[in-house]
Length: 412
Image 1 (cartoon, rainbow, N blue to C red):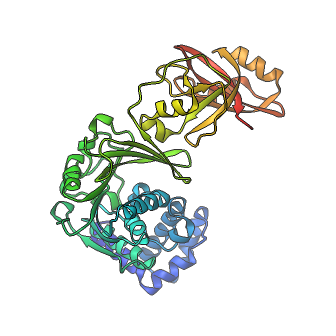
Image 2 (cartoon, rainbow, N blue to C red):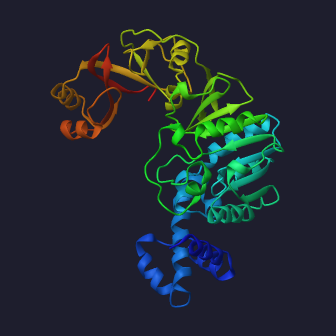
Image 3 (cartoon, rainbow, N blue to C red):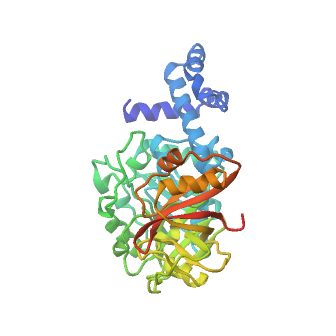
């Protein structure tokens, strides 16, 4: 289906017949899609039914990111669901911009408008720009659906041609997936379009638009936030930018380059609680023997290279100079790491592990790994845990040697 046809089908969904179909599909079961489609096509055009079913599937997928209340009022494209910011992260970013005194933002590469919606809900007026006509229409429909159209202007245009000088801040979320033939000129059309875009891009200069273009756009504004992949090399971060890594529920979601805040700072922010750790100037913590407690830093802390700050606060050290596990003799509450109480430290040996777990009647086994090539599923299959008790096995290296650390969540 061509882009013009896609746009026409989407426009039809906004008409009363399309809205009635979407309402009827609110709780439909995808496993029964063929039967549902056959029934609906008796009374509605086949193309409209296909479009409504596609939108219903996307809404179900989007509920995890946007929450069901919003997702079932919003509109999506396949790439829009895949690449949109999780609502909790967008809300955090929007409130941080608001706290900086930002009242207006040029949202470049806006996609389906997820970030624009979060900004508007924070009371910020937004210019949302995307070159793809379908994506722009979806963003416009989302602003209307959530009652934010007065704060969001959607413009179908090339982001490289936008004058951002009237705005307090610039936000850029470049496409970070392959298959974008148009380069910087196409910018967000791939982000919001309906076609699969291939694998993730790890080279910041292969973003669309490239990171260097986004950085130049940021330098022209009083404030800016550039959303980037969390795996960005630290050496690629401009000196005048603050780099922030954000996790949500323990999963690292994104990194952001902030301009007009704290040049050179490194920050890890953990949602939903909002705990924030800054630093990046401490030397690496030393290696020490495994103590009673092992701490697994949050992924955002690791990506931000702030493990040394966590080790300092815990009065701990590393178990290996290449492994981001911190060990200490005392239990210290911290939002930045998960604590385990260690009962056994053994050289890697599956027979010994199986015998120990059998002796302790461990049937519920959690296997974690860091610095080990062995897969947790293989461990569970080989040791065949059985019994009423539970344990955690951490496969790692201690001072360079493959090691099994056995214990459980501290305080659990």
